[in-house]
Length: 192
Image 1 (cartoon, rainbow, N blue to C red):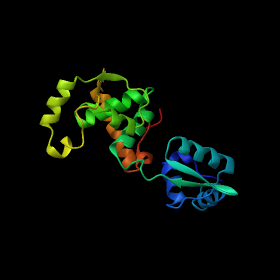
Image 2 (cartoon, helix red, strand yellow):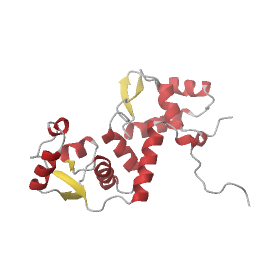
Image 3 (spheres, rainbow, N blue to C red):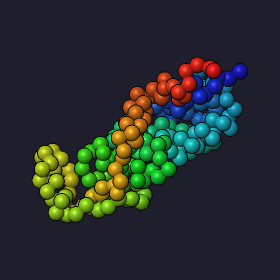
Image 4 (cartoon, rainbow, N blue to C red):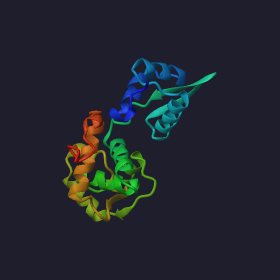
């Protein structure tokens, strides 16, 4: 009998089971079975394809099978973490990504940063060049060298509410610490 996969953060378990070198579907299925997760091969295949679509796993052809290798950059920077949070917390991830980055960085977000975060359609207003020049002058030298005044920068039409911002921060912290399985998802604490 298999464990219920909803009891723990199954994504973390799969990524850990894949290791740094990755595994084939059959090798991963065997590894998960050793850990107490007895799942059909097709379920593991579907889950790996979903992780591939979410850019958390890379699929590599190694005839006669495919090798799935975890991508280490998912949680490495603020841009990918903001994007993952936006996808999980909003129906409009492009807008939410801009909102999160704007709130965290406390400045307009440059077009190259939005591209790095995976934003396809920028849903915000372009900041005026003279405003960006003023912001650029007030930046510490370490930031000034990284950002070009000539590049377009954007601010969201509607910033995150305090409640949404807290929810996004919670999501990011739980993701970074791989602690989502510790969170109680219901408010009911006892049966009626």
